[in-house]
Image (cartoon, rainbow, N blue to C red; front, top):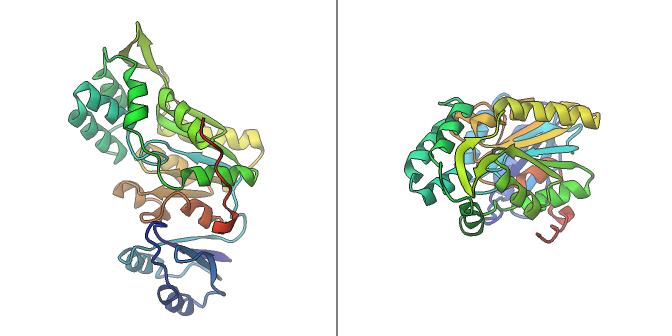
Length: 296
C-alpha cells in the first residue's frame, strides 16, 4: 500500500478537488483526505502507477507537487536537514563573499558544486581561500542582514520534535551559521564545517576533515545506529549534489527546490511547496502542526 500526497505553495492555495478527483479515479485510489484546505490532500494506492512521472509533470505545470510513499512507517524518527538553500534561502559562503567583494566569483563556483559539476571539498577550499583576511565580525552582519528562513521550517522542526523525532541540521556550510540557524528553528543539534579564525580575521582555511557528501551519509548512518533505527525511519531534505547520498539512503529523501541534476535522481521532489511539505508527506494535518518555540 502506498499514499499519494498532492500539495502546493501554502502562500498560493490552489489545490482543488477538480485537480485531484480525475487522478484518484484513474488510479483507483482510496477516499480523498484533506490535510489542509486548498493546500494538501492525500489518497491511498494499491501500487505505484506506471504513468507516475507523466502525471507528475502535468501537475507541475499547475503548480502542484505529488509525492508517493509507502503507507507503512510514514512518520519518521530522525530528520536530517541541509541548511543553505534548504532551511534558509541563501548560501552563506556566497553572502560572505559578496561582502568581501568576491560575490560573483564565489557564487559561480557554488552553483557548479551544488549541481555536481565540481568536487565539493576542493570547491569549498577554493571559495574559503578567497575570504582570507575578512573580518570575522562580518559573520554576525551576514546573519543579521542577509539571511532569511525558508517558510515552514519552524513548524517542521516543532512538529517533528513534538512527535518524538530527533532533528539535526547537517551542513557543508559553517558552524558559525548553523549554530544560529539551529537555535532559531529549534533543532536538537547541528553539524557543519568550522571556519578558522586568527586575530579576528578569517585565515582562508576550513578545519579538516571537511563535512561534505560522504560525511552527510555517515551522519545518517551514525545517528541511525545510535538511535537503534534503520535508514527507513529517516527523513532527509536537501537541494545540492553534496546531499544526494544522504537523500538516496534515507527512507524518505526530499529534494526541496533542488538543482535539476539533483532532483532528477530523487523520487520525492518538492518544487512548489515549502518545508511543511515534509509534514504532509508524513500524513500530518495542518491542525496537528506544533507551535514553534520562541527563537533565542
